Amino acid sequence: MAETILQKLADHALERVEIARRAVPEAQLRREAEEITGEICRTGKAGDVLPFEAALSGDDIAFICECK
Image (tube, rainbow, N blue to C red; front, top):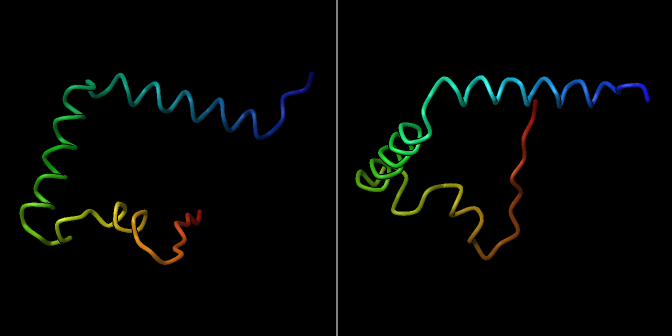
């Protein structure tokens, strides 16, 4: 079976993720993410709720879109 362009892209993405995972230990990544999240919540710059969480929990219809 011939490999499709989508399969090639997916395989390349998996390779990039594996390289990134080896570059930074998971514990360090988790610690840094928790520090950033805590800082946003403490400073109130983004309010007490993170913007993504607010988008998911609102009463209105909302779109979460990605453009590349």
